[in-house]
Image (cartoon, rainbow, N blue to C red; front, side):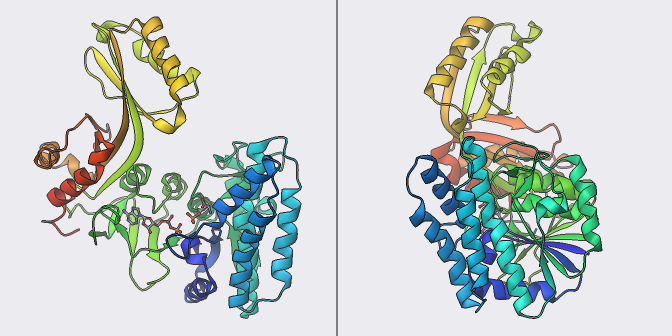
Length: 453
Ligand SMILES: Nc1ncnc2c1ncn2[C@@H]1O[C@H](COP(=O)(O)OP(=O)(O)O)[C@@H](O)[C@H]1O
Ligand SMILES: N[C@@H](CC(=O)OP(=O)(O)O)C(=O)O
């Protein structure tokens, strides 16, 4: 049995849905279909999820969200019209949106989640109706009734362990099951969404819970490329990579798969196949536990902007027991998570996502580090990009770091910091955001142009 997930780009129009129906019915093993909300039809288009967030925000500010709601409804109506679906489908979506918008707003984050989740929930109903209209036995599945229990963290929920056992009973149902991605229900019955792009996570949870043979993730590219295609033109396709490599790469900027979407599949040993809805005969990329190391030291290079670093130096830091704990404790007090902590004998840098803290919080953090930890120097660097060079082959290859830093030097990119992951499958370079693109291109030239992946 296969779990198959379609992203927003695969569900953006009636034409796309026709491809989806063809793909699903081409293989009787494709039993559970996870759907996102309709995504972008063209580059400047707005995803339904973003329209719904605007709707929720308008309502919370006591502005009339009518126009915004109309634009959400229009997206579904356009699809229904293209596919000649009966009016009842759109009426049901309309009524659902009206009910949601009129619900309790005393907890704004939860209200936003309730609206956001409707994007996938209503789309699953629409897709089920479409399949049925073409004579296919398909059923919408309500995640509440199916038992997709999640933690009560708005916009950042996680599946609870009990969810997996409960979801197993879906195996007994007949027909094709259309399951909305991106959200679940807390113990108290409230809607909570995963973080953005979280329908990938739903697919992986279901693959694990139902003990699927394969988790197929359909998107709009032929494969996972060795580098983001918006940075390098026609980059090399990756045929096979390990869970560990993909987790590192998706966390560091390969947005093609959510970085939290691998763990459930990995735990159950289920391979993940990334494929293209617009070219389903292409084999795509297979993510597995182990692969042959035939491609050289590096399989992919990912990058992401929006980081800052807090550099702290203090003479004899290495001998001060508890210094690291106290430093990270200051961050914890402000609810800040950190990404990396490259360190020396007398100094350490903490790298954080910049969008977590404004100037006021940053000043407070710096003052506490200076006053409570008696640091000799505390410096902040803003607008950093992190570049992650990833590959299982790194462990067996000598000189990968030297090659990478030489390539960056030749491209006149100044390295602000370096960190080698303890797992030895990744190395991280911090550079200024303005140098990100040039750095990635230089690393790509170094590691990919001469080899076949
Ligand atoms: N290394 C990469 N390989 C393939 N695609 C990538 C990579 N890095 C970023 N992407 C982007 O991920 C996009 C697919 O993910 P996403 O937009 O979330 O699709 P979906 O709508 O199917 O969920 C691609 O169109 C591409 O722009
Ligand atoms: N629709 C949600 C969840 C999702 O997974 O979407 P997509 O598959 O289009 O990335 C979002 O935009 O975040």
